[in-house]
Amino acid sequence: MNWNYEKGRIYSTDEKGELLCETTFIRKENGEVNIDHTYVNPVLRGHGVAGQMMEVVAEYFRKEGFKATATCSYANIWLRRHKRQYPDILSKDTFDQAVACRIDGKH
Image 1 (cartoon, one colour):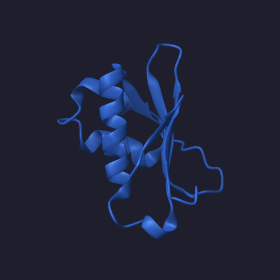
Image 2 (cartoon, rainbow, N blue to C red):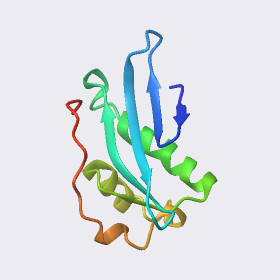
Image 3 (cartoon, rainbow, N blue to C red):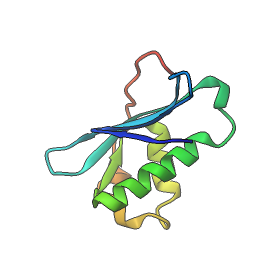
């Protein structure tokens, strides 16, 4: 997949411009980031795309020096499951984060 990076968003589209997957995140007052949304196009679900996307996000956060929490339920679970691989991007608040994913009709 070809990944696109915008402020607060990492995503991929197909050759027609249709959204394949995306992660959005916001900067918190303390300088950390909160992953508030993940999306995978229904035709790709069940193929590991969400996990691949989160690896891209985690590597980007690592490169940028971001610490992360996640109110998105999928991202929150993924961060918890991969705490040994990515301890450097986890906020100390990751495990206390309330989960309330932003829903905009794409789920």
